[in-house]
Amino acid sequence: MEKELTELIKKMVIDLGASEVGIVSKKMVENEVDTIDLTYTLKNAKSAIVFAVPLNQELIDDYLSKKNQKLNLNKIRTTTFAGGIGLEVASLLKQLDYDAVPLAPNYVYRKDSPNGLDDRKPPLSHIFLGLISGVGFMGHSGLLLTKEHGSAVVLSTVVTDAELISTKVLDHKDNYCDKCNLCSNNCIPKYLNKKETTIKLNNIKYKTREYRNKKRCVLVCAGYTGLDSSKKWSSWSSARFEVPKTDEEIVESIKNHVPAYLKRKRNAGVFYHPLAPGYQMEYSCSTCQFICNPDKQTRANRYKLIRNSGVVVEDEKGNRKAVAPEDADKIINKMYKKRRELFVDY
Ligand code: SF4
Ligand code: SF4
Image 1 (cartoon, protein in one colour):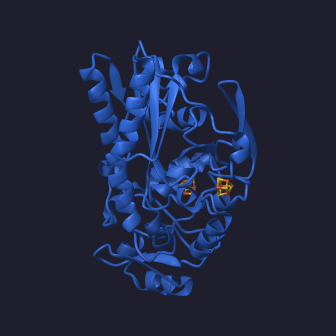
Image 2 (cartoon, protein in one colour):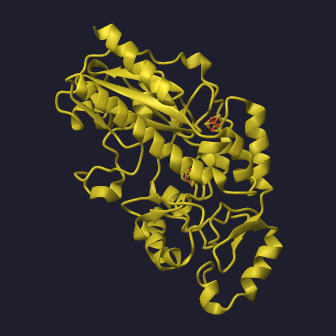
Image 3 (cartoon, rainbow, N blue to C red):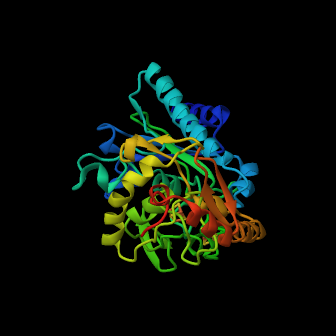
């Protein structure tokens, strides 16, 4: 029965649109970090089903080179779709008299963390669960790297009291992360970095980059600002405020940038997020997620696209385009003062 149900659920997840699926058993997560404690979500949990849904690779080059932001909408819809797969799987399990809880792919945080939602601590880490069940490898980016799609996937999990047969971790020798650092080199706020740390899960050690204050990523990925320190290229954010050096200043600057954030338009599609101003967040980076690919040359090409993509500016209707850095300066300098304050410091 266990075997039959396991195969049925794995096939269902793939049939519904995932590219990879793994199964975690309760035994694999006992006495481990609390973000893989299945009982946090379901008291009598015995297994978790973890899966990856690929983003559209064909949209990545145009996004990174700032031709268009179509990938943004693809990310929103794929995230919603991955959540839907979780709901379908949990519904079937419940109809078969098991208990099951589908987790949202993103933007749900523990309320019982010391600083509540602001700690951005997920109920469970899809990345860690995916790692120990063979959905992908650990990348230096801290993201899960799938065999075929790199980290350009959306992850999700269903926790259940059904006893399913666990899947195995991937062979470390096949991990294509060669620490090329193209992900960390393009991280404008230096949330990603070259320093290494080791984590241990289910008795296996994994190397990844040092974990820093998540607000560093929030500042740029959520679009509060986005100009690289070289001033030659930017994220998709049209804001050009300086990225502060210390974590404390970064936390403060996010608060200070809220009024400007709310006044700028977000035309490329938004995620509904409990911590975003107005509860709407438009991704404007995700560079680390999109640059990584199993093929080294693809990564190198994407790096060039980013570095030559220019600087994003925004017109009064909120339409964005990338221009040469000197032209961006001219456009900003021509703005009347009140409007300029939406983009630059004085
Ligand atoms: S971009 Fe390079 S260093 Fe970063 S995760 Fe991918 S392979 Fe590893
Ligand atoms: S999304 Fe952007 S800012 Fe956030 S970690 Fe990745 S590269 Fe850095």
